[in-house]
Length: 327
Ligand SMILES: [Zn+2]
Image (tube, rainbow, N blue to C red; front, side):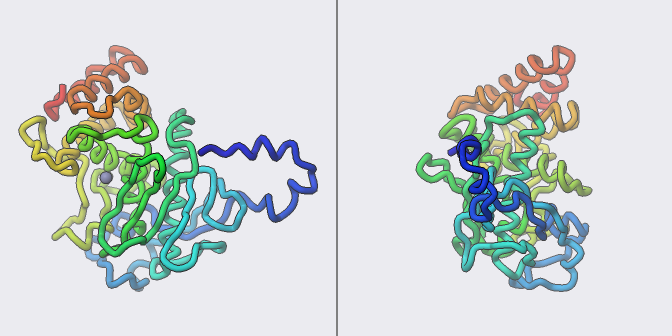
């Protein structure tokens, strides 16, 4: 779905264009975590405490500007649309804290929009460039998922433990699935393609989180969400700088095997820098087969680096995949 009423508006009488009912502000101030309290405060001792807005978390809140809103007063805009949550839908002022479920709605809108703005910054205007639908705290289990079915196309976030949408990196991981599904509809029909999906989601969480809210330990994904289910002392859902290698580390579980892929992408990031690496990674994904293998996708990515940045850049991309057994 793409917005077409911008064109239509030009044909309307001026009085109607100026009417508050059809043209509200396109930005609003909001309170979010950026990316999450553990990373922001560098405090691995923070815990969920049943959704309480306790004192140690207060310094983790940040004031940001929500952009590209449609003026309806709800979290609907060019790149994100929060359809439902538990209880009422969020409306301005978007200054909720975590003990109010509308806080997670604001987080989802903000971070999905930032993800799309980063894609634009990289030069992509054809990658999931639509109001991504999201449903927040829809069910009690500690899981989130993306359903790429064309009739659905919704990101859903759970609320077990720390509410999933309280952590930008969980939102961005799921958005990564929407990116790949936009580029290659139905992507991920083989186990290795599924693993690429998980690995890219983790890498994308790191990339966007670092772009807008850099913190010390970039490769640690979902530092806050994971306090509920990891032992520590450092809490990460997964890391993007692991030492797993293809094919010996494969165990057949897509999130586990995705760590091979995310580590190769992170190696490319180190070698080429974020902008070149992310541009090549996104560009290459257009050419992935829905059921690709990791080595095949690695070859496509290396070829894309060569096409974009020349034969001097290609060896460092190849080395990043070679380090993980993928080239
Ligand atoms: Zn996933």
